[in-house]
Amino acid sequence: MLFHESTTNASPGGSQISLFRLLGKATVNTFKADLADEFSPNPKTAAKGTRELNRDVRATGLADVQKGYPASVRVNLHPGTYYLMDLGSFFGPMGPSGAPNPALTKLVVRDSDDDGWSWSDSSAREDGSGWHPTIWLTAADRFVGPGRLPAEGSVTFRNVGDSIHVAQFSPVKKGTTDKQIQAYYDSGVMAPPPFALNGPTFGLDVLSAGSSATLSYDMPPGTYVLQCFVADSVTGMPHAIMGMHKVVVLK
Image 1 (cartoon, one colour):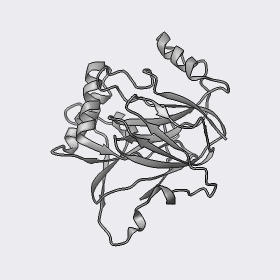
Image 2 (cartoon, one colour):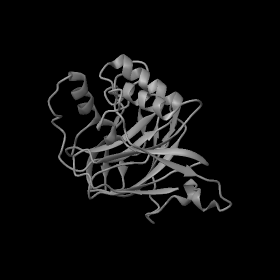
Image 3 (tube, one colour):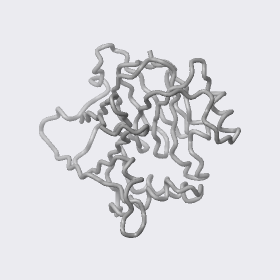
Image 4 (cartoon, one colour):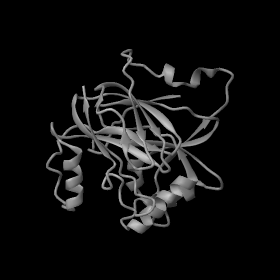
C-alpha cells in the first residue's frame, strides 16, 4: 500500500506520521500509556516504554515531513485494524487523567482478491533510475547501508534488529563525520551541534523489528546525518547517543 504524505504544519517539526496495529490484548489506552513512558525524561521509564511498544504494537513506519517537502511510503499491510497518528499531536492537549492524549485515526485494511495493493522489492523502483538502495536497522543499533543516496528517489529501510527504530535525516555541514557527531554526544554539551545546518528534515517514522518500508522523497542535495532517537530498551539512552547515526550524501 502506498501512502502519499504532506503537511500544512509550518513548525520546524512538521508532521511525524506513524502507522501501527495493536498486538495481543493491547488497547488504544495501553498504547498511549506506552508512548508516555517512551517520552519520559527518566531513562529507566523511557527504557520501559520501548519494551512496552515492542510488545504491544507493530509499527510500519510512514514519514516525517515538513511543509513543502512531501514524501511517500510503501508498506506491505496485512488485513486488520491499524491506527494513524501524527506524533506531533502527542504533545498536544492532555486527556482527563492529565496524560498526553494524541489523536488517532483508525484505518481498516480488508483482504482482496486483487493483489495490486501488495508489493515486492522487484516492483518498488518508482523513480525509474534503477538506483534503489537499502538501509538495514540492526540489533547492534546501527544503520548499515551506502553512504550515498539519491536526492530524489527511494530508499528501503529494513529493521533486522530486535527493537523499534526511526530513521531521521537532518542536514549537516559538508565534511561532517560520524566521529565528530559521536564526539559531540559524548561531550554532553547542551549547545546546538556545530555541524548542524538549517534546512528541511525528513525521514521514516517508527518501524518495528522484522518490518520494512520504502520511503520516496525529493530533497535538496547535500550532506545529512541519519539518526534514531528511540530510547534503548535497557539503558533508556537514545540510540543516536549510543552510536546509531550515519552521515550520508544525497546526490
